[in-house]
Image (cartoon, rainbow, N blue to C red; front, side):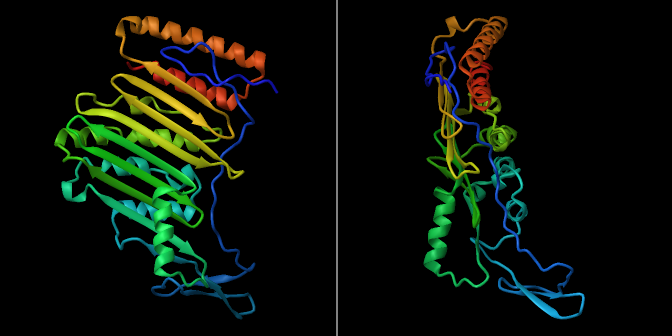
Length: 322
Protein backbone atom coordinates (compact mmCIF):
# COMPACT_ATOMS: atom_id res chain seq x y z
CA UNK A 1 0.00 0.00 0.00
CA UNK A 2 1.32 3.44 -0.91
CA UNK A 3 1.31 5.96 1.93
CA UNK A 4 1.78 9.70 2.04
CA UNK A 5 4.27 11.40 4.39
CA UNK A 6 3.15 13.17 7.54
CA UNK A 7 2.21 16.78 6.84
CA UNK A 8 2.91 19.87 8.90
CA UNK A 9 1.66 23.25 7.71
CA UNK A 10 1.40 26.92 8.37
CA UNK A 11 -1.90 28.28 7.10
CA UNK A 12 -3.31 26.05 4.36
CA UNK A 13 -1.22 22.87 3.92
CA UNK A 14 -0.25 21.67 0.50
CA UNK A 15 -1.01 17.98 0.79
CA UNK A 16 -2.67 15.53 3.18
CA UNK A 17 -1.33 12.78 5.36
CA UNK A 18 -2.25 9.23 4.56
CA UNK A 19 -3.56 6.30 6.47
CA UNK A 20 -2.35 3.10 7.86
CA UNK A 21 -4.99 0.40 8.23
CA UNK A 22 -8.52 1.37 9.20
CA UNK A 23 -9.19 0.40 12.82
CA UNK A 24 -12.64 0.81 14.33
CA UNK A 25 -13.14 1.66 17.97
CA UNK A 26 -15.00 -0.58 20.35
CA UNK A 27 -16.22 -0.27 23.89
CA UNK A 28 -16.13 -2.95 26.52
CA UNK A 29 -18.81 -4.06 28.91
CA UNK A 30 -18.93 -6.37 31.87
CA UNK A 31 -21.78 -8.80 32.37
CA UNK A 32 -22.47 -11.97 34.25
CA UNK A 33 -23.90 -14.85 32.27
CA UNK A 34 -26.71 -16.33 34.32
CA UNK A 35 -28.09 -19.88 33.91
CA UNK A 36 -30.84 -20.19 31.35
CA UNK A 37 -34.51 -20.16 32.35
CA UNK A 38 -34.15 -18.68 35.81
CA UNK A 39 -36.13 -16.13 37.78
CA UNK A 40 -34.40 -13.40 39.80
CA UNK A 41 -35.98 -12.10 43.00
CA UNK A 42 -34.41 -9.17 44.84
CA UNK A 43 -35.82 -7.97 48.16
CA UNK A 44 -34.65 -4.93 50.12
CA UNK A 45 -31.17 -3.40 50.00
CA UNK A 46 -28.12 -5.30 48.77
CA UNK A 47 -24.56 -4.68 49.87
CA UNK A 48 -21.39 -4.65 47.81
CA UNK A 49 -20.93 -8.39 48.09
CA UNK A 50 -24.60 -9.33 48.22
CA UNK A 51 -25.91 -12.48 46.55
CA UNK A 52 -28.91 -12.30 44.21
CA UNK A 53 -31.50 -14.97 44.94
CA UNK A 54 -32.17 -16.90 41.74
CA UNK A 55 -34.43 -19.92 41.20
CA UNK A 56 -34.48 -22.49 38.41
CA UNK A 57 -37.79 -23.75 36.92
CA UNK A 58 -37.66 -26.73 39.32
CA UNK A 59 -37.50 -24.35 42.29
CA UNK A 60 -33.89 -25.00 43.34
CA UNK A 61 -32.01 -21.99 44.70
CA UNK A 62 -29.06 -20.66 42.68
CA UNK A 63 -26.55 -17.99 43.71
CA UNK A 64 -24.78 -15.46 41.52
CA UNK A 65 -22.24 -13.19 43.20
CA UNK A 66 -22.23 -9.51 42.32
CA UNK A 67 -18.99 -7.60 41.58
CA UNK A 68 -17.63 -5.34 44.32
CA UNK A 69 -18.00 -1.67 43.40
CA UNK A 70 -16.18 1.02 45.38
CA UNK A 71 -16.90 4.73 44.92
CA UNK A 72 -14.35 7.43 45.70
CA UNK A 73 -16.95 9.45 47.57
CA UNK A 74 -20.52 8.80 48.64
CA UNK A 75 -22.83 11.09 46.69
CA UNK A 76 -26.13 11.18 44.86
CA UNK A 77 -25.30 14.27 42.77
CA UNK A 78 -26.16 14.38 39.06
CA UNK A 79 -22.60 13.60 37.89
CA UNK A 80 -22.31 10.51 40.09
CA UNK A 81 -25.70 9.27 38.92
CA UNK A 82 -24.68 9.77 35.27
CA UNK A 83 -21.38 7.98 35.90
CA UNK A 84 -23.19 5.01 37.43
CA UNK A 85 -25.52 4.78 34.42
CA UNK A 86 -22.66 5.01 31.92
CA UNK A 87 -20.51 2.48 33.75
CA UNK A 88 -23.35 0.00 33.84
CA UNK A 89 -23.87 0.23 30.08
CA UNK A 90 -20.62 1.58 28.55
CA UNK A 91 -22.26 1.16 25.17
CA UNK A 92 -20.98 4.38 23.60
CA UNK A 93 -18.38 7.13 23.89
CA UNK A 94 -16.07 4.90 25.99
CA UNK A 95 -18.46 5.45 28.89
CA UNK A 96 -18.19 9.25 28.52
CA UNK A 97 -21.67 9.81 27.11
CA UNK A 98 -22.91 13.28 28.21
CA UNK A 99 -20.22 13.47 30.94
CA UNK A 100 -18.06 16.06 29.17
CA UNK A 101 -20.99 18.41 28.75
CA UNK A 102 -22.14 17.84 32.33
CA UNK A 103 -18.70 18.73 33.73
CA UNK A 104 -18.65 22.14 32.02
CA UNK A 105 -22.31 22.88 32.70
CA UNK A 106 -21.53 22.71 36.44
CA UNK A 107 -19.77 26.05 36.16
CA UNK A 108 -22.89 27.93 35.08
CA UNK A 109 -24.53 27.79 38.50
CA UNK A 110 -21.48 26.70 40.49
CA UNK A 111 -19.51 28.43 43.20
CA UNK A 112 -15.85 28.49 44.17
CA UNK A 113 -16.52 25.80 46.76
CA UNK A 114 -17.83 23.42 44.10
CA UNK A 115 -15.24 24.12 41.38
CA UNK A 116 -12.94 21.26 42.37
CA UNK A 117 -14.65 17.89 42.06
CA UNK A 118 -13.43 14.29 41.89
CA UNK A 119 -15.32 11.03 41.57
CA UNK A 120 -14.48 7.46 40.53
CA UNK A 121 -15.85 3.95 40.61
CA UNK A 122 -13.69 0.83 40.82
CA UNK A 123 -15.03 -2.67 40.18
CA UNK A 124 -13.45 -5.83 41.58
CA UNK A 125 -14.37 -9.50 41.19
CA UNK A 126 -16.95 -10.82 43.71
CA UNK A 127 -14.35 -12.88 45.56
CA UNK A 128 -11.69 -10.15 45.64
CA UNK A 129 -10.40 -8.66 48.87
CA UNK A 130 -9.07 -5.27 47.67
CA UNK A 131 -6.70 -3.52 50.04
CA UNK A 132 -6.65 0.22 50.63
CA UNK A 133 -3.35 0.44 48.76
CA UNK A 134 -4.79 -1.34 45.71
CA UNK A 135 -7.80 0.96 45.75
CA UNK A 136 -5.53 4.03 45.86
CA UNK A 137 -3.33 2.79 43.01
CA UNK A 138 -6.31 1.86 40.83
CA UNK A 139 -8.03 5.18 41.49
CA UNK A 140 -4.87 7.12 40.59
CA UNK A 141 -4.57 5.15 37.35
CA UNK A 142 -8.16 5.92 36.41
CA UNK A 143 -7.64 9.63 36.99
CA UNK A 144 -4.30 9.99 35.20
CA UNK A 145 -3.47 7.09 32.84
CA UNK A 146 -6.57 5.03 32.16
CA UNK A 147 -6.87 3.00 28.97
CA UNK A 148 -9.21 5.72 27.68
CA UNK A 149 -8.23 9.21 28.79
CA UNK A 150 -9.60 12.66 27.89
CA UNK A 151 -8.15 15.91 29.22
CA UNK A 152 -9.43 19.43 28.48
CA UNK A 153 -7.44 22.47 29.68
CA UNK A 154 -8.85 25.97 29.45
CA UNK A 155 -6.89 29.11 30.39
CA UNK A 156 -8.80 32.25 31.33
CA UNK A 157 -7.67 35.78 30.56
CA UNK A 158 -7.69 36.42 34.29
CA UNK A 159 -5.08 33.70 34.89
CA UNK A 160 -7.13 30.79 36.23
CA UNK A 161 -6.66 27.39 34.62
CA UNK A 162 -9.46 24.85 34.44
CA UNK A 163 -8.63 21.19 33.79
CA UNK A 164 -11.22 18.48 33.24
CA UNK A 165 -10.22 14.82 32.98
CA UNK A 166 -12.20 11.69 32.13
CA UNK A 167 -10.84 8.16 32.38
CA UNK A 168 -12.32 4.73 31.76
CA UNK A 169 -11.31 1.11 31.43
CA UNK A 170 -12.91 -2.28 32.04
CA UNK A 171 -12.61 -2.13 35.84
CA UNK A 172 -13.50 1.49 36.48
CA UNK A 173 -14.24 5.07 35.53
CA UNK A 174 -13.17 8.46 36.87
CA UNK A 175 -13.70 12.17 36.35
CA UNK A 176 -12.14 15.24 37.88
CA UNK A 177 -12.37 19.03 37.70
CA UNK A 178 -9.57 21.26 39.01
CA UNK A 179 -9.32 25.06 39.06
CA UNK A 180 -5.88 26.47 39.80
CA UNK A 181 -4.04 29.77 39.51
CA UNK A 182 -6.94 32.07 40.31
CA UNK A 183 -10.65 32.50 40.95
CA UNK A 184 -13.30 32.23 38.26
CA UNK A 185 -15.48 35.23 37.56
CA UNK A 186 -19.12 35.03 36.49
CA UNK A 187 -18.02 35.79 32.92
CA UNK A 188 -15.51 32.93 33.12
CA UNK A 189 -18.20 30.53 34.28
CA UNK A 190 -20.59 31.50 31.51
CA UNK A 191 -17.88 31.14 28.86
CA UNK A 192 -16.92 27.71 30.19
CA UNK A 193 -20.52 26.51 30.26
CA UNK A 194 -21.00 27.62 26.65
CA UNK A 195 -18.30 25.13 25.61
CA UNK A 196 -20.15 22.17 27.14
CA UNK A 197 -21.76 21.05 23.90
CA UNK A 198 -18.54 21.53 21.92
CA UNK A 199 -16.58 19.40 24.39
CA UNK A 200 -19.13 16.60 24.22
CA UNK A 201 -19.23 16.80 20.41
CA UNK A 202 -15.45 16.35 20.32
CA UNK A 203 -15.67 13.28 22.58
CA UNK A 204 -18.55 11.74 20.65
CA UNK A 205 -16.77 12.31 17.34
CA UNK A 206 -13.64 10.50 18.50
CA UNK A 207 -15.75 7.66 19.91
CA UNK A 208 -17.73 7.16 16.71
CA UNK A 209 -17.02 4.36 14.24
CA UNK A 210 -15.16 5.44 12.21
CA UNK A 211 -13.80 8.25 14.42
CA UNK A 212 -14.22 11.86 13.29
CA UNK A 213 -12.66 15.13 14.42
CA UNK A 214 -15.38 17.51 15.56
CA UNK A 215 -13.32 20.34 17.05
CA UNK A 216 -14.92 23.37 15.44
CA UNK A 217 -16.98 24.23 18.52
CA UNK A 218 -13.91 24.28 20.77
CA UNK A 219 -12.40 26.98 18.55
CA UNK A 220 -15.40 29.25 19.05
CA UNK A 221 -14.55 30.22 22.62
CA UNK A 222 -15.00 33.79 23.87
CA UNK A 223 -11.48 35.19 23.43
CA UNK A 224 -12.29 38.20 25.58
CA UNK A 225 -12.67 35.86 28.57
CA UNK A 226 -10.75 32.68 27.68
CA UNK A 227 -7.22 32.80 26.27
CA UNK A 228 -6.62 29.18 25.16
CA UNK A 229 -8.20 25.74 24.86
CA UNK A 230 -6.27 22.45 24.71
CA UNK A 231 -7.58 18.90 24.30
CA UNK A 232 -5.59 15.68 24.74
CA UNK A 233 -7.09 12.23 24.23
CA UNK A 234 -5.71 8.71 24.28
CA UNK A 235 -8.35 6.16 23.31
CA UNK A 236 -7.86 2.41 22.99
CA UNK A 237 -8.94 0.63 19.81
CA UNK A 238 -10.45 -2.84 19.71
CA UNK A 239 -6.94 -4.21 19.11
CA UNK A 240 -5.61 -2.64 22.30
CA UNK A 241 -3.66 0.14 20.58
CA UNK A 242 -3.85 3.82 21.51
CA UNK A 243 -4.93 6.52 19.07
CA UNK A 244 -3.66 9.82 20.45
CA UNK A 245 -4.93 13.31 19.64
CA UNK A 246 -3.64 16.74 20.64
CA UNK A 247 -5.49 19.96 19.86
CA UNK A 248 -4.48 23.50 20.83
CA UNK A 249 -6.03 26.87 20.03
CA UNK A 250 -5.36 30.45 21.11
CA UNK A 251 -5.33 33.87 19.49
CA UNK A 252 -2.07 33.20 17.59
CA UNK A 253 -2.25 29.61 16.39
CA UNK A 254 -4.29 26.44 16.04
CA UNK A 255 -2.94 22.93 15.74
CA UNK A 256 -4.11 19.32 15.57
CA UNK A 257 -1.95 16.22 15.62
CA UNK A 258 -2.87 12.56 15.88
CA UNK A 259 -0.93 9.32 15.89
CA UNK A 260 -1.71 5.64 16.29
CA UNK A 261 -2.96 2.62 14.36
CA UNK A 262 -5.31 4.70 12.20
CA UNK A 263 -2.37 6.83 11.09
CA UNK A 264 -0.54 10.08 11.84
CA UNK A 265 -1.00 13.67 10.77
CA UNK A 266 -0.26 17.21 11.88
CA UNK A 267 -1.93 20.46 10.83
CA UNK A 268 -0.90 23.93 12.01
CA UNK A 269 -2.55 27.27 11.26
CA UNK A 270 -0.79 30.58 11.95
CA UNK A 271 -3.20 33.40 12.87
CA UNK A 272 -0.60 36.14 13.40
CA UNK A 273 -0.86 37.57 9.86
CA UNK A 274 -4.52 38.42 9.21
CA UNK A 275 -3.75 40.13 5.88
CA UNK A 276 -3.27 36.76 4.14
CA UNK A 277 -6.47 35.22 5.50
CA UNK A 278 -8.90 37.03 3.19
CA UNK A 279 -12.64 37.42 3.62
CA UNK A 280 -15.10 34.63 4.35
CA UNK A 281 -15.87 33.99 0.66
CA UNK A 282 -12.18 33.76 -0.22
CA UNK A 283 -11.54 31.46 2.72
CA UNK A 284 -14.34 29.09 1.72
CA UNK A 285 -13.14 28.94 -1.90
CA UNK A 286 -9.54 28.25 -0.85
CA UNK A 287 -10.60 25.48 1.56
CA UNK A 288 -12.79 23.87 -1.09
CA UNK A 289 -9.91 23.87 -3.60
CA UNK A 290 -7.60 22.19 -1.11
CA UNK A 291 -10.20 19.54 -0.24
CA UNK A 292 -10.40 18.61 -3.92
CA UNK A 293 -6.61 18.27 -4.01
CA UNK A 294 -6.69 16.03 -0.94
CA UNK A 295 -9.30 13.76 -2.51
CA UNK A 296 -7.25 13.49 -5.68
CA UNK A 297 -4.08 12.70 -3.71
CA UNK A 298 -5.90 10.03 -1.69
CA UNK A 299 -7.19 8.41 -4.89
CA UNK A 300 -3.74 8.39 -6.49
CA UNK A 301 -2.01 7.02 -3.40
CA UNK A 302 -4.82 4.69 -2.27
CA UNK A 303 -4.84 6.43 1.12
CA UNK A 304 -7.06 5.15 3.92
CA UNK A 305 -10.50 6.73 4.10
CA UNK A 306 -10.62 7.06 7.88
CA UNK A 307 -7.44 9.09 8.30
CA UNK A 308 -8.25 11.22 5.25
CA UNK A 309 -11.67 12.03 6.70
CA UNK A 310 -10.04 13.02 10.01
CA UNK A 311 -7.45 15.11 8.16
CA UNK A 312 -10.15 16.95 6.23
CA UNK A 313 -12.12 17.52 9.45
CA UNK A 314 -9.03 19.05 11.04
CA UNK A 315 -8.19 21.15 7.98
CA UNK A 316 -11.70 22.59 7.61
CA UNK A 317 -12.07 23.21 11.34
CA UNK A 318 -8.72 24.94 11.78
CA UNK A 319 -9.28 27.11 8.71
CA UNK A 320 -12.71 28.40 9.72
CA UNK A 321 -14.15 30.77 12.33
CA UNK A 322 -11.00 32.90 12.46
